[in-house]
Image 1 (cartoon, rainbow, N blue to C red):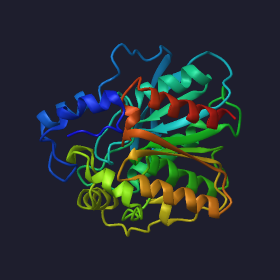
Image 2: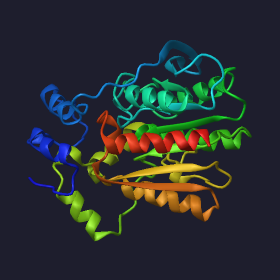
Image 3: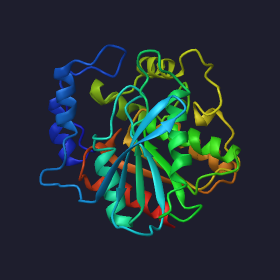
Image 4: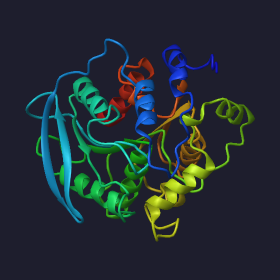
Length: 312
């Protein structure tokens, strides 16, 4: 399968995904996971920057929440960011590139303090609001760190983590302590996903291998698993179904080859209609999750946009 508009490195890796199914409700096959990991491997020769790292466990409403704190320097920092990895609410951890490499890069490039959250995943009866509450508790705690000036904390994340960051931004606004800004990278913000209304986008998506798709069937399962017994419009679960008025500035970063693109695009429209300052980035030539390919130039550009947002 040839997708000439895909960035060359990922175009070369497409054969690794032959036979790998779409995301669904079945337990992932280890061989398929290995193929996915190979597709998203770091750019050859890339090494993430060295920064100071502190591991902590914080008290949350559902028990301890592990966090990893990244600092470039000791002493005052220009800003802080609470960062949430993705993984469809079922996967991901603090070591995945979208968590670790991204946090290292932002800390090294900006001097900001980054708090990466190991929120609870939706297994074994865990559903919303548990991961949301974990991220909220960490964000409230982070605001007390003395090296970051008051009012200089932002929230952000990728995919499912962007959903959590967006929901926490709305909750903090309602509590009278909104974050400084929010960076939502290839986010899932609506259930069900909005129709794209774009025949070219739909054709692009149809050309992708199943492993790079989030089909209506798979997203329906993932959303239902996340919500559990809650209704779809429960406050803060899907930010696109909530009130966006009065939110802080947002960065919405979209991938060209992504079934979730219509959700991020629609949320950006909702923010703009509510007079919220919103910057939209369309990253061409990449599928969903480009931050997981550590060192990819397109990922580093997005990282620089996040850094500019949180330090401005």
